[in-house]
Length: 156
Image (cartoon, rainbow, N blue to C red; front, side, top):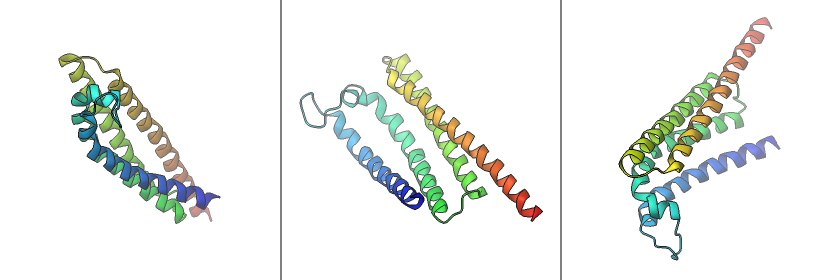
């Protein structure tokens, strides 16, 4: 079951890469949709002109985070779990999440001051910051597990 779960997770990560590419391509077209047309999304159609620049600003961080997740899952498939490589990859993911949260917060402030308030942007920024916190905690757990593993290896 472990291998199936890891394989499924890696598949979903790679699928997210393609979906993100689709979003990058589709965003400008979705902004032009009118109510009643196929693929009309209220948030994108009404606020897209405010959201397009922050979205494109965080896309590289999204891809970097997805690549790091894919590498971590690849390491897990190879039974390389408690390794400093994974900790470094998780630190990169934390940085990507914090960057996206900062872009979201700055975007919210700019949008709120110049146009009008779009609460979704600030909620996304808080969500990205929360994910960074969760990954940071996991990173610290991995680091401690690596220390314990190395101490045990020295004892034997």
